[in-house]
Length: 402
Image (cartoon, rainbow, N blue to C red):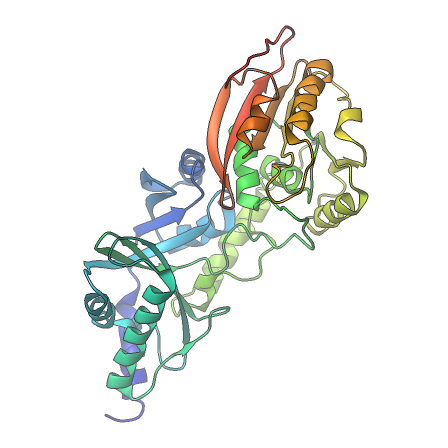
């Protein structure tokens, strides 16, 4: 085979590698945010929407893939499914990956990375699956061209995503690159940061209306306040990102992306907002203020440095959000007593408001002593949490069990 034959075949194949017109995509998310992601996709204009655990399938064209990456607030990744097959052992996994026409998507001058998720009795190690898949692709290229793509885990030309459930193997291309919660406005984070897409999901689940006050009484790195301001102002979630995975694909249409990006920027609203972020720690609040400045929202979000228990709302209306210590990643001496004081504070000073609290500490939650009107299961990292809504009407009753 001539030295350039592999590259020639690769370039010819690329003309047909990516589907023209509309195609299926999948947006992944955290457990509990699926319905919020469905709502986002509907408003964005997606079609054929199908919800599944930790994700949503939908249909759109290349431009919609760009828009989904740029605008979706609760998504983690936008995947383009390629194909699927059955594998009951490592040889069948290897063969199933190797038999695919990878030369239509990547050449020996490019780089690749493989991420895997496994829920199977047959395969129980994601790194093994990723390594086996990498070997299969590289072996295919060696046999066809005498050379192989490089592996670049941080900044690859093509990021491949493999999902195994039982013996079903699904192979997709990751169009996002870095996870979409990495908005790129964080200049520093505290000890127990909340992911940006989770923060956005909590704000959207809360039903907060932008014409009403929003208070984050324990704001940490300021993520919920920033995400609230971005959502209320229609600022695209990915506006501060310089790069998405699809930008390295051979079918990347820079002009189309620029058109979509400009259209999204033009829809930003200059809406007066009443968002208040507070934290007891000055160093932590200083980090939050840096993040707000990077997000160009430091003139939109009011910040104060005080104990939550000294905080009093300016109006008895609006939404309070709290992400208090869970007693897991941050040390806390009397976590149940602390949550009891939160309940007392809500009854004393936040009557008339809707309070939303997220926590993984079941016993501490019970100590709040108020009846939640809504309970939603979410995950903050690996921690299973409850997001609880308390409607702070006068005369709210104590309870002994949730």
